[in-house]
Length: 243
Image 1: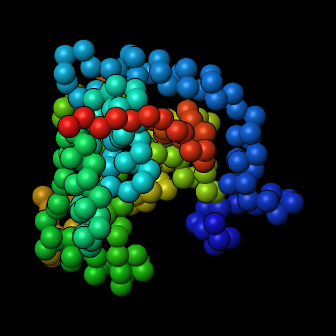
Image 2: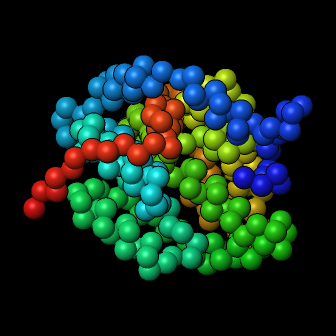
């Protein structure tokens, strides 16, 4: 990570918080963490064929690996939820199709492109970041789907603020997704601020994070997979594809 990474900090010895977090991970009893993970899976595992967890899925290596392990090792029934990339690529489409062909269900959401393109251009000139709205959308969609389908469990890959250096708000933020942290560090803006002569409140619904009370009432828990497993070690397992 470069020293210019947003929210990264350094101690008095010039060591960044990501490296210090890495040192702390060397003290972890991973067997205990895995046992906790298995207990969470057992609590939520579907008995009647419903989806029992959501994986926010880009088609990349992290989210694909998580989905694959949840389904084929831990016998969960994940629903993959994808917010379309701003500029879809051929290889991205191929990667997603390959995993779906392994036996996954996927909700792929592509927002109003007229509004998306307008916001890209606007945010590029206003903030130097053309994907402000995309950041909001990819965070909001999985939680919205979880509420809509009454799915209590979401698995993200890793807590970037811990793993790569950043501002950690909650003491267990590397385990459970912290709403305040998501709003401050990842979304950073209320989409209602984007209303202008070209964008209405209705246009912004896909980008708006669910109300905090809705999330609490829904009893949804979002965990980071990397909290439970040694993320940087290849886990070898036998997988036999069914014809």
